[in-house]
Image (cartoon, rainbow, N blue to C red; front, side, top):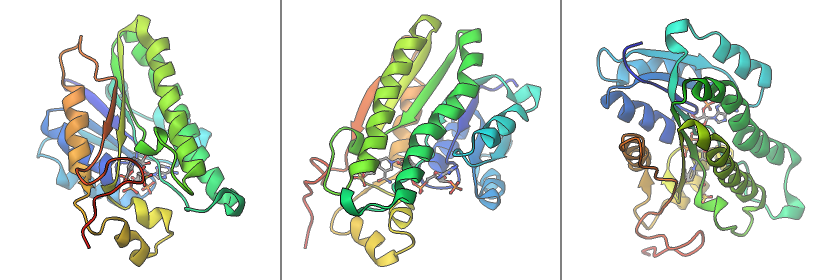
Length: 252
Ligand code: NDP
Ligand code: 8X3
């Protein structure tokens, strides 16, 4: 492949999809991943014409599926330069004593273990080539715990720690490791957290101007396209109306 390859998990919506579009505009070849195959097929039509594109349809929770999908990449797609570990969601917003085990399993398995499975397959090639970039999408929730955020905050705190661990362990190999930690971004995130409850989801973004997926994609693209010796190691990004995980300047 002549162009540099970016591998993006969770590219069927929100931040991941916006990253695919933004990086394609910067001249990257795109490998988009997610469970909703029809969206992966559709995404190609939304990229600049001529963008080299392929997709992998797998669930990051299922280790064998992750490994088989990545192993299935044709040779010309195997030299991945940029890995964006973005797939993830919150499931539920309950106090710890009322939390659902299924929600806990989902958040730990997707946000933490899924990131590890994907990274386990892709980092050895980067190490061998002494080249690559890993962008882990954490959250402000990983920097500051909020009421009823318990396990989601824990999962993102783990992403934060793992990001630091990756930077340390991959330091001898010239691999750039970047942690991006957004506050409230208006995506399908709340629809997933509230299990399709539109009213609850819309309320999350009412009364202030939330971040959009494109805002985060823009920042990730900026971080990726810095000169090789520059590492934006860790970035917390809020909308203007947000001052912490719980303090918002909302109208009305
Ligand atoms: P979306 O719900 O819009 O996107 C989530 C993406 O993750 C989808 O593409 C989804 O694809 C993918 N995904 C979820 N579960 C799985 C799975 N089991 N296997 C494979 N892919 C999966 O939310 P966002 O774009 O907002 O979220 C992206 C990341 O940003 C997440 O890690 C989230 O925690 C983080 N984040 C979001 C914030 C926000 O306020 N929105 C703020 C801070 C961080 P599919 O369903 O097709 O598999
Ligand atoms: C998403 C932001 O505050 O809903 O990670 O947890 S928050």
